[in-house]
Image (tube, rainbow, N blue to C red):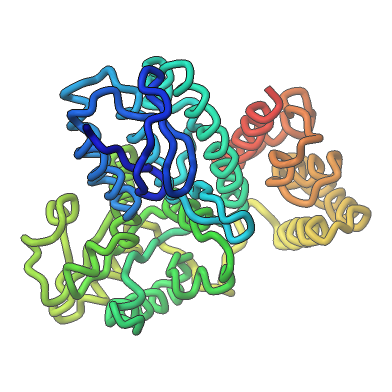
Length: 409
């Protein structure tokens, strides 16, 4: 008789209803779905082991192999969903229950995921109830990640590297990445470097910030002095996700930077790219110069130029307006905002401030997050932002309005 293992903890499953294809873990006690055919039991065990080890891409490949042999099993599609969203079940310190965490957030809701919808269509009624409940939990976590990530400023560059070795000591890769971070920030670029960027996030889940950086950065640099560092689970989790984003957006660039490694032995996906050998004289200068070309020239911090068509005093008033808004000083913010629009009646930033003042919120993010906000379609200030704003301003306010519609509908 085939033995099935728990997708949450790896314990042995007890078949509670063979016809309904559901079981219960003898270790953690959680109910879950079972594969339709016992002949693939070993493959499911291996796939779940890979997923619990956070080897999501490898697990997806295995489940896809199962699907190609039999595309009528709900369990196969659900297993792929768990990998797509990087779901790991961890023990809650409060309840000691296993709860899902998400390591690969997506903009797509799990309820819209094609594999999830296929799983539901193939599931028994008992399986469907279990899948729907798990999807609901994952959706709540996903929305929380997206909510936090929307507040983050966009990054130009993402540095991907391994911070610690097997002895919990800092790696050479980390030191190299730090030097690159310093060089790039001196050039005015906004750089995601975990050692610095996540320093203030201790005790918090990192995924919202990694997700925001991966989706905004135009360039990723993968630093590696050892193959095992490049292939380390969380390092690979970052560069493999960026490769998927690059496949959809050809303007993105991934640059492998290596030392003491045969470039032909780099992992699939990286070895096809133009890599840079750190043994090459002047490699750092070449790397920084190349990144600047891809991201566009930036002004060094403190030397930002005022747009030609925006008088300095308007820019200062506008900055003051948004600082006062963040502090919740709406009365003073409105005075500065009125000065902006009196001087420049086609200033989209001024109308954004007016919109925030009208709705009594401090930031654009609060417009989409607050349950009290209504869609912006008929709002005069919203319409003026779309009329006078640049492409970036229009895209941001459209995204905010779309998020409000998604929440209220």
